[in-house]
Image 1: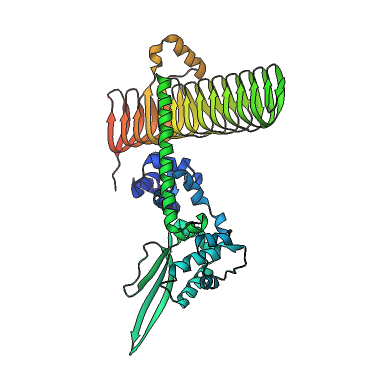
Image 2: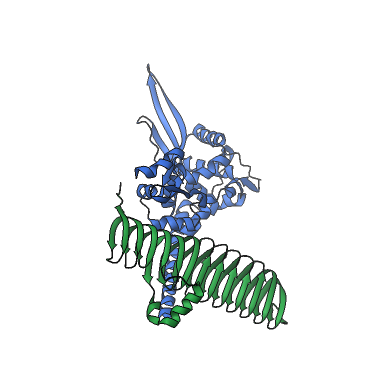
Length: 259
Length: 249
């Protein structure tokens, strides 16, 4: 075991055995995900070790990727995952204004905050994304906090941010903290974009957390959040049913041939 | 050469150009020049396709060479087929001999003849009862091998790997001779560099390394190293040089 670690330490590689024991996945899953293109061929690095040929992976890539697949496979059929994981380009595209109408997102005040003109036929993805977020905050957040959200998104650069939303499971947190000193008291607001489960100091109050993945899905599919959940469930069930049917058919055929 | 609307058939010697067809049938010696898209492609004579093929059903019972990749739903080879590109089909059944240079990707692959692949083979279910030579990785959820000739593969990886002694021994000398003819001689055993799976059962297998959760090394096996995490059984006739149980740290 110790010898196996030698090559891995030089380049921050992790052996297949370690990957399996660290993430709890099986050989079957690893090979299946490789076949489906969820783990790129180039990440499989073959090295000779004391015990023979071994496969290593770039440690900082493989572990997050496996965690991502484990998380996402609950919600998506495996065959769609490769596309979802590798899809980045279309998130930079535009959204038809009519889609925002279908979503019921047309609110003059919110459109104004996100800088969307009513007359526009197509809206940049970044602006639609901003709209999807602020409308979730509108009841709890103050006007200047909504502005702060908009500025934060602008600063982050939506083109850069959107691909990371899925990879890292990003959430947007609206936080407030009261500071009192010498008889004066003030409240400050903060906007943080971080992966789910970020921890804050106890004096910070989390006013609202928005799951950015859900916002993206809403825009892409043109449905509200509850509808997205129902559709996903239906899709999952349908896929499971079809797979079962197909396997049954193959099995029967195999039996027939053997018999 | 007769031609119907949208279908083409060569029954003597002839050639057609690629394109989109409903049915293409070659029963003499025929050549397709250019990329071909068809509902059905049947070759029972000597055929050659110079270009990519995309067809729902591909049946080769003669001898055929494909100079590029082959895509389809169903492919059946009972003669001999040589594919210089990749094969990507839902179902591949081979009872003849098939030689692929660019690798195979299928949902279901069954070979009772001889299979030779220069690249990787990936499938959901892989069943072989003949012989094969795979230069790359054989990866499938279920790998079922009934050894019926010389089986050679660099690596096998999957969920369930089941290698059994083939039934050919009982079928007599003639059958044995036929297999040797097909496979170019060689003993009926599986040789592999590495075998990794969750449930592994092996017979008549010679491998450098076997890794798995539950591993059964059956009769006729010679294994360099076995690493297992849950259980290991070694049959009395099998040889295993090194065994080690992996901790679940």
